[in-house]
Length: 124
Image 1 (cartoon, rainbow, N blue to C red):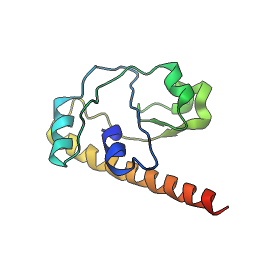
Image 2: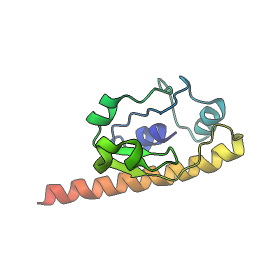
Image 3: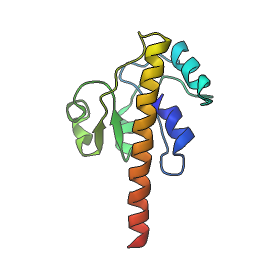
Image 4: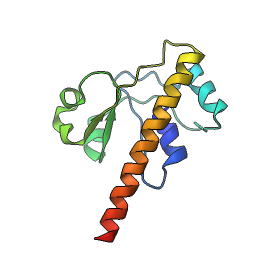
């Protein structure tokens, strides 16, 4: 969900790549439906297993596991930002819709912070 929103709202400042600690290999049907309701394309997206190289190459790791990211990603703790977002997998459409709104706000906020950071860097 976060990857889809990042591609839709912030491709100018975010090159998203989503991976999970327990990947299923597919996007849940309810998640796909909720994103489609909002006109968000998820073509080519699927649940991928997180690899160490993913963390090493990332500039920022958004952790939505519910656990403290600095412990899960200890070798990359300086790059971790924890988002307290419930997992919608076992929820129905309504739960997915609520979480989708939360994720949209989080991605919008992150994009704004990154754009401001980029603007400040260019101004210097």
